[in-house]
Amino acid sequence: MATYDLALGARRIAFPMRAGVEWEVLEPVPVKGAGSPSVEGVLERVLADPPKPGARVAIVVPDYTRPAPVGDAIPLLARALEKRGVPEARQTVIVASGTHAAPALDELRRAWGLPEGLTLAANDARAPGVKRGVTRAGTPVELDERYANADWRVTLGGVSFHYFAGFGGGPKMVFPGVASRDGAAANHKLSLGPLPPGGLHPACGPGVIEGNPVAEDIAEAAALDPPQAAIHVVPEARGWTYEAGDDGQARAREVVRARGAVGEAGAYDVVVASAGGSPRDGDVVQAQKALAHAARYARPGGTVILLAETASGLGSATLDRWLSIEDGDELERQARSAYDLNAQTAVSFRSLARRHRVFWVGSKSPRWIRLGGAEAIDAGPGIERALDGARGRGALLPIATAVVPRASLDDGRGPEGRPRT
Picture (cartoon, rainbow, N blue to C red):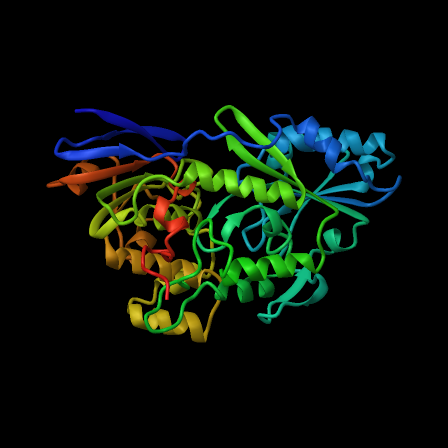
């Protein structure tokens, strides 16, 4: 029997491609990117209008769950700033951890090879911030004081699909990356659709910006206190492509769309997806994004098999509460009447598990997987059992969040394959 290697945590497993299923491997297709393969080239553009000598500089980078070439770019940027009169002691690297748990900063410093003279900090969403206003949707914008009070700010973010915000990177580095918990919660609540029918908002989906209430609110919130410069990166087969500025963000998003639009929506009897291994599958919150992408490919009632280790647990103190509401209708009601962070994660998880047979492979958090409506299985006999009787078309997604069905970007389908209303 043929097999295909898929990532699960820090290891890889040989997934059995069962005979009787017509398998397709769905992964990003090569397209020519418009950006520079060299970080040095983009830094020249970023520093064309540099900070004044002695300025306080804030450099915003993603946390470990969102891969980006921080170790390649930031030491070079720090040295370039020092040559322009901004010593390392005046530079602060802020991890845009949003409402996530604070990362281990010493480990990040070592992993990224950051100079010891740089201050490294992480956003604390519960700490008092600097108020910058309120969006038209009523979202309060309160930002990390180290960012808000800096004289010059630059962001570095990976442009990628986001299952309800459209794209990661770009303005998300500012909001909710260095924002308060209240602001992030108000924004994320916009991802919930009307009740009935419930579920996520029909205009929220990966690669969708226009009409997406979450994406539009993020852009408006970040524009209340934007950085002076922004670096946008897109993964390549052997490295990264670098872009800068608003025009660079637009080009990066189009490259991600062009590469990731593969396969057909709702066309596969069996969908097998890896979250991409560590750190993408570190917790349930992050790994559920892969499930949302995978389910777009599955026919109603079809089988979805997700490989995600979730060694760090839930990734959200509030998600336990939401998944513990066993009645689906009650979950939908409370998600809207008493919203708190990650209510939309539970709503999405539950709705997908109702629509498909979902098997979650290798999770170290089986209780929460079961509460979400999926079956937690192991990577051996469990997979064989999930594939028992499988027939028809099958899709293999080596990194599920890197791809979306072609139709989902151009025919008006919502985040779970439903036509938009």
